[in-house]
Image (cartoon, rainbow over all chains, first blue to last red):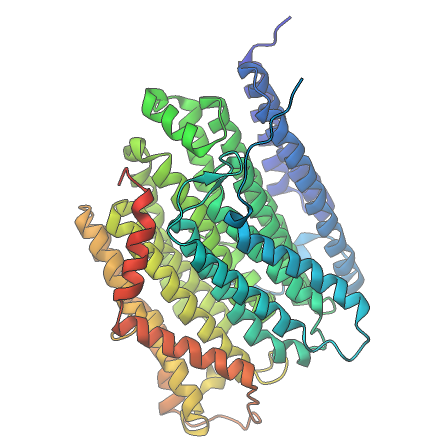
Length: 101
Length: 485
């Protein structure tokens, strides 16, 4: 059975939107990172869908790069969160408010 | 099954290879050098940057693509290489003393700067969406770490986390836009995308959606309104030398990819994007300039000023003609010189450890340190766009391009914005020369490295302001690749 392309686009757009909403409304830095991961994986899904549609390989190749980069980004992010936790004992982004306007 | 290996010319990525080797070498030498003898790392990185610059000039006038069309080998990329190398070299010169005061003169700082430069170069040369994305991430991840370099300083932590979250967030938008472009055309090569759009997929909703997402993603990176919210916080909290690098390098790199994609791939559907960018340009200039007036922290003021300058650069992008592209390159050179110069003075006046970064700490500087105050005045005049500095010539080219393309109102709004900006730039000069010092702040210690950076940038700002010809010619040579303009 062939999954129509529109389904891929709809699912990945929905996942992406959920990720965006998560980043905007959640306050825990780690959950925000998880939401960003979700956005990136939504992109991966749409790339795979398009690669399947065009019977081309480069969309799938892109997915590998995205996954690698996401892993690197999270490594830096978690290190930063640990550094902040040692200084402030919190990971709530609302309390990171030293600088405003 | 046979696998054919495409023919490649390694010298086409010579500067990138040099920097990669230098970066890895620095990491290795750090492990092998005993403690207390690590002072030579900045100079080693400077040598690598100079070699890369020489290689770039030797590549000048090559054209075409290489590595199976993955990278462009053209003057546009080379021009940006030189801007990035200049920005990195100046950043290294202004960082040494500053980092020593914090006991953070670590070699990984220089390694990360060099890797960030490689990322920028890949963005300027990328001919394939994967490569542009990878370049962006190499650049961004290095800068996330640099922004959080002062691990014990909560402000630096906060800046790094804010930059990381919003940077990753915007990368996701950019990536989704790239996926949509791929969906609309079936290719990730910029050449093929341009051809597919010429062949008439211009009204495909996927393509327009993808283009919109690209504007959002690049808008974040160049800090254009309404995606600018991270800029002041990150610029204030990050180490000042990193702020200088970010304000110039990241912006130039993001604009390089922005311009290449929009002038190469999307000229056919200009109607769809130029009014949108028109709005962004006006909002960016106006908000940046108006909010900068209210700032008393100089780093924050320069952050809003950098938002305003992103707005001027967007004007050149909206104009989308040959003069627009030339003015764009010229403006970036001028902006690199004047902004890094201004940040060098900020580092000097702050004495040790960012102690004095309020604008009122500049009172009386004109009498205590005449040379320093004169250099700062040059940078402020240049940022405000007053002749005979490079800032004036850059603005003149940008607004002429807008008039030539028929955007009279955009040029008028731009000039009015420039007038507003004169207020907060000249306020610094007025404080320096017309007010006595409020308190004794201690002596300014100048090292040869940072003095030479100030001297170089001040002389450069004046030189290319009085004689804009050579840079104009180079820029003209560089933008010939955009045949659609």
